[in-house]
Length: 469
Image 1 (cartoon, rainbow, N blue to C red):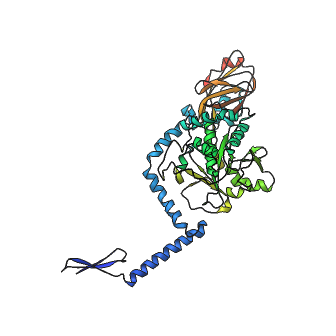
Image 2: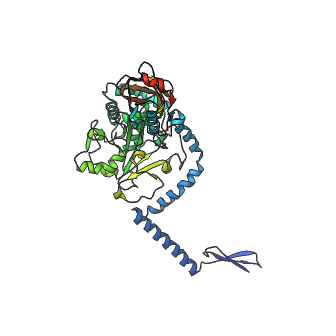
Image 3: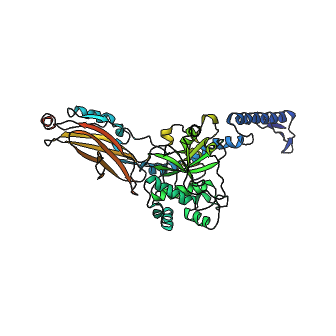
């Protein structure tokens, strides 16, 4: 007779060599004690996690499984990253060799090229922001073209005095399409087309905040603006409210547009982002410096409440091309691994596979940014200086660069190199992106002093290239 047991000794048995069969014996008291000890150890561990991460005891096991599964699922869908990387590479425009350089040093090198030439402010030559893993939807996606054509979105925003006013007009339109509620959208609710959502709303269906936020993102993207989905929570685990955020070229920042409560938040006339509401909203509210601005009448089924508690924690989905790029569960380009979150210090730790990002300049990264790089400076006999500048930028919907001297009219740039002809005096050299949809990005500038007269300098100075680093 041969006896054997499992590695944990939980099940024991024997083989009757005479009859050639197994005879299993009941678990021993020792086996039961081991089971109970393991169960108690697991319970104690989950209880400890619950206390540390402010989780319900029943929620801790699921949270642990979700965190543990994230890297495994990401590995299974690794091919998605190659597609996303190819899309992100297109957002960096202009001279490739300038994309990751700080051009401020190059501008100051010009001061040794031409006597008396000086750089007053080279802030517009700073390196472009570090790359972010966001993937933007194309305004030309078929379902977005369908949205524009079906509801004439250009007419919706027509007549607005400023870009910000146009965005608020679009938000008011979206906010009035359906009442607040919890009607079903169907099995594939995250992939439903915006036109179908609007038609269902017109038929009397009522939808919740995330549906309104996604529709707002779709509508803004269809117009040619950049938009993203942000989610707020009072605990870091329950998703209490979703809003759209739009990139304002006018204000050079992201801001919340809540198409469910039909409001925006402002301080001193400047709209605020979800990050700002998370980290500064309570202080601004207590100081009386926070304005909650209605952009359209409230929805009949939605009472007015203080939403700031829902900004204790905020996360952003690092994509808005949900309808045109399907991803598997756990893909590194979707879900937890493609989500940035931030929270107030009062919240404490959160058990999640999402990526924490508490830097304002990263969480609220700039869009349609430009960096001006000095390339060549020469003086002419006609008492002018000719300055050649290289341009690089970050623009998901790039159309062209434009430049201007001082307050002169903007002029188109062919490619990524521009020339400025400067008379003696102080000048502000400006550059900006114009998107494919015709929206002008923020202006970035470098200020210089050009000496005079230049004719004498021309005889002793040969034009020499000015490095951009």
